Length: 398
Image 1: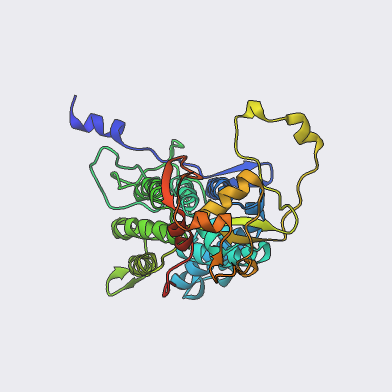
Image 2: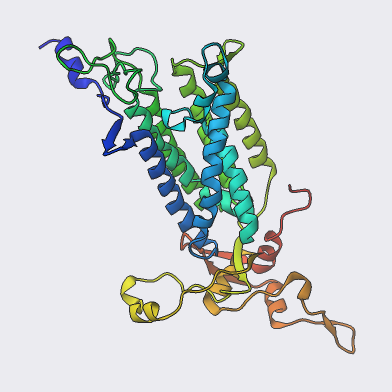
């Protein structure tokens, strides 16, 4: 047995079909992968939002705005950066609306989705930074699932390779999109040689970025959009070197692909934000309707299902108020809402002129207490005076 006989077994195959007909309706693998990625991002974001005090189901209200805005932004970025396909010689401007034929830019998707999420967050009364941080690990997972659509389309691959994971590429039929050309024996035609599966490199990298965000966020308890900035840095660092491996047509600046420049600039912007912005993680308590705390998570065997089914679903809150982690935990445990910052009672003074402090004030003056981490379950000892001070960003933070 020689090496030539082993190479076909070592190669990664590619699908020869990316579109299936369900009666008159075409089912496109690319679209299905994008939809599945959106579902994954929504599930992760919903879980993380609820852990920070947001009412159940808020992610759906956010997705209604963010998903269409993200798709529009992704298409606009693609058309702007590849205008010759639509407005150049032989181009068809109407093809700019043919999203089902591919052509979505992740940079435009993130920008457009951020605008949509910002609009939804304002309507729900949720700080946008809380939404962004909750989305941070879900977004790269969604991108990873979406990259499978490029595999079905036999696109976004790199140069030739002899590595064991080299990818077989079909020669696709331009007159029958989503299907490979076939020879006289009705066998799909392959391009000669094997190629770097750059879409798979990005898929694996994105999964690693999601894990990185989860681990660092759990350890450092990132807030004020820093978890999202970490995702941006992680993704763009990978996209930079992966983009350099791609061989598909792309516009260039100074001989370098446009997306390489974009990745570098976006990475620097996210790095500056991550280093300059400081502040604790934000937690939310509802204002108005549905102000009762959600019961702490427990084993399903301890849940009274009959009472849950009989009771009415709680109404969505009118808005939210940002509180510290200690205040949020106290609210979850006791139902006691923290006092408004401007509603704190004035200090009472006795005949000697000394301030009469409340019991809470005495506790804040310097008692140490063991607090259980709201997410990791780890117990830490904190000085409550320092904790209260740490719940506000230092002067000069942006």
